[in-house]
Length: 68
Image (cartoon, rainbow, N blue to C red; front, side, top):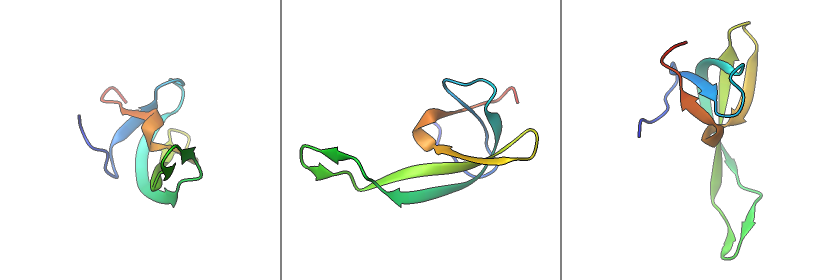
């Protein structure tokens, strides 16, 4: 599996219209509870879309887009 890094072309799994260039990766504390307590962190990505707008999405919802 390839790792994400700034500059990668990405798109969302469930929304093909959400495609752009990964600008930065953000680490945030998790608010989800599991049986053992809380998971440590969640990763989010700032993605610059084709129209120039920067949106934030969970990193786990992205995949690489080599066709962009």
